[in-house]
Image (cartoon, rainbow, N blue to C red; front, side):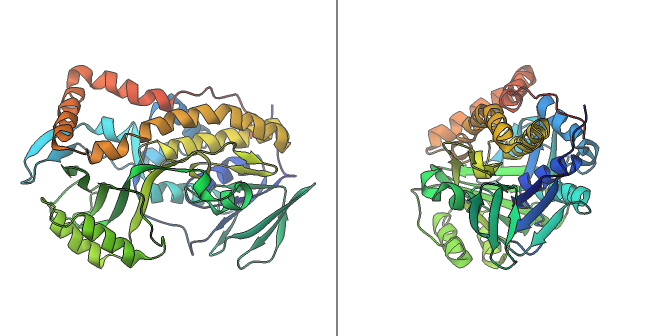
Length: 399
């Protein structure tokens, strides 16, 4: 059975991961896809993201990118929890942290962009301003570009989705704060790390240094700290740096060097560790995909869930010949519980990196020393794959 969606026009907001993934899947069916992204160009760098289990493999294979993902994998090795003087406390085997295959987020985005740039319209440096639904489409105005009409609009614009705010309401209704903040930025590779990582924790705060690309001069720093919900301007990088400097003042291990690098960086990611919980994923002709609809800042296999969601949404639209009412209902029924199961895992991210007491730090180390043993490593791998594979994929039409 073959299908095409050449009659369907779709606007996708966001060109990080979920947006290009949906564009790739829809373009295979011939849909006319436009991706709008507020950044001036494709964003590089970012966290390493991983895939695990047969569901992720099936989707990557269907998208035609499995081999390329493997070709650009990080090949990350063991990550080690250390004392303040750098003495190892426990090793975390690569498969526990990096899944079956791990790739830098920016590299994954580039792969999907390269596969779609010739048959998908990308508009960088712009964003949606208003959405007005009519019986036969959605009238969209943009911050810069001329107004246009689309059959469907997809919010794939992340945890702080503008599309979700316009169509579903204010973010405060949907964002659930989990009591921690996370920051990430590049630092000099003082420790000479080579595809390995080091984690140092004190009660309520943690510093993680890692090198996932083999660059001898450059590493990445990850800072996690327990906190009440903070009020700050998400566009004020200087204010975010002040928050981090205050929270990590006096910390041991490599923290002083990391804070020095923080002062100089112009590439800072800073966000609460949080989840998105919406009542529904669709509103008329608007649908949410990835972090915009069921996101978790870290630890919830968000990239894998986003790619599965994109595959299912495109497949359901193809099955329904573009009938969004039927397709959206099926997409929601298939993805909602799967996404929630992955979100549950993300609730452990903050306490894993920065346990609240010394006792809990020691307890974490003992647990991971046990789970990292050869005897239990296979069992733990299956446990981490359970959420990633807890969805029944349907047989979608041939593109």
